[in-house]
Length: 398
Image 1 (cartoon, rainbow, N blue to C red):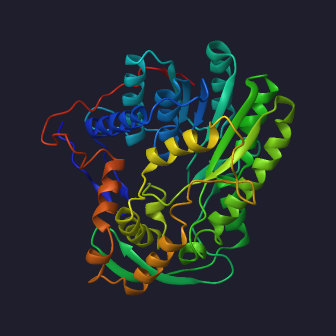
Image 2 (image 1 turned 45 degrees about the vertical axis):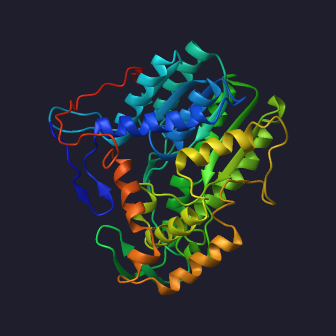
Image 3 (image 1 turned 90 degrees about the horizontal axis):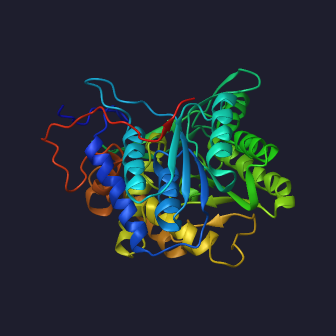
């Protein structure tokens, strides 16, 4: 079939298998170009199919030559209906891993559930024995709690008072004012239940209980801080409360891993275009200005550049892992440089529908957005008939 983008708001309802494949190949080639990483050999990635999770899986496999197991919740293709981008990304990753002689298997299902945890533990036990690195990169708007059965839905809201600021419709370029009503206590609790550290800790507890974590095992979850411009809706809002919980959980997990000489870290990454960030008011405008400034300074990184740098220059240097005063790894260091933030803040004051094409990089934002779904990727012929029914070779049944 011929597959074209069908966009509704901040979501694209279609994905292109060839575009997703080319994206994955480009990321693999980047990692290979940076040389080998003396890193983990058996890696579990939770949330392995898109964004930072996918980049972590690619970096582990093609940088450190690791065997990888990926867990994700994606939609397979059906006749005449394309699958989700994460499905096609994983199919492409596994195809390349097989060609390279690397072990790669995947589990498709709800990573919050006890059932998927059980399937994953059994697979590790049967195939790898133990795990050296667990990446926790789940991004879901809802969670069915495995013990209570309660459905928790996360929200993107400020806490305490309404928040008003500029935002942009990245499809039209229209800059407008947005006001977001504050969260209730229930909203905060639900967001922490979905995006906080409880499930991360449950995974580590389950792995440790069955002796599936190797001596010296590391686990890393991903977070974001951002500038004062976005903090009311992000770091001081409901998501920030969840990230605070996630970051506190790293210390709890580290305590539990002491007998293995293991460690849990939170890596604070830079602002990038993801399906999740596209949904947060204010963030698309901030990112389009940030991209303009960072590209001009030669500091811009995408997900694969961020994660490759995290592995090679932070986690696996052979020495102590450098952390900030709160124990976090900071690969948002270039974004948060004083000169970068000063320039973004100055541009923010000038940002309007008329000025944005000149002072921002809205085209870069749009391109990155469509790339997430396999569209607008250089070298792909979108007029060509493609087979939407792509299989993931190493898929393991739940």
